[in-house]
Image (cartoon, rainbow, N blue to C red; front, side):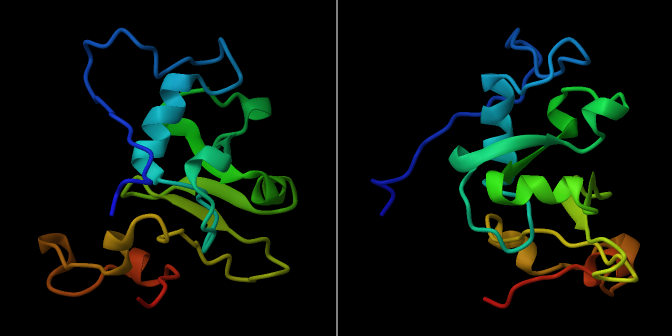
Length: 149
């Protein structure tokens, strides 16, 4: 079943000597950062987009023009079609679980409800309660869009 798959090895270790945190020294994501982002996100982070990571550009969640760094923790994979939306009122940031959230402009959603893309990570379709939730779903997670399987 996986004969057609692209295989990546992601080693999250401090001994690789490959820089994943470039700070302000470079604006574009390095090949190493792209490999880690592919392993972490799987593809475009825009809600319900099915584009694979190979077709993605990398958006700074804290904008480069506003002092954002080119660090693996500040990059969001996004396809070319959706990348332009970040310049038209959509905001991008990481939630408390490390997932990328897109906040629509106020004219589209007055409450600016955060949206995540769970297409590439089916495990996120369901929320399993943790001890911090006291047996119920977290309000931060329950407000997210989740596709039905």
